[in-house]
Length: 148
Image 1: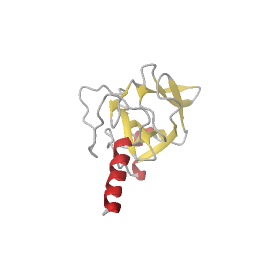
Image 2: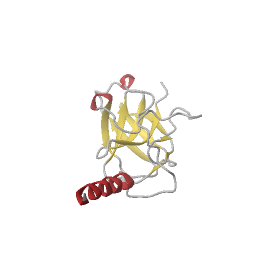
Image 3: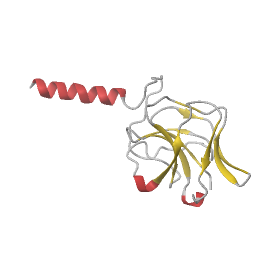
């Protein structure tokens, strides 16, 4: 009986703490379904499990391609955050499959301008969005459509 209560409390604590180390006032979305895009422009981040804002665009300089986040980019802190390319226009809040994404790099910082190199062998036509993803908990913090 004590073991069951301890197990329930442990699970509840894990679910409450989740993937973030920075608690904010916004309640996370808990569905494992794609996030609804309401009036979002291509390149504008949409909140997933945690508030995410700003824009991303693909830029080419000297024959190299980059994902560039603007100065308004901001997301919550997390333990294992990556920038990924995702095959679909919308990204589930949790449970994404390895076959559906490509890791670009660890997230450099949770706010402000930043740039990530897209490897030369990556065919951008195969990916429709960029996401901020927590590898440890397989949770999408937010994403933006590439608007193709």
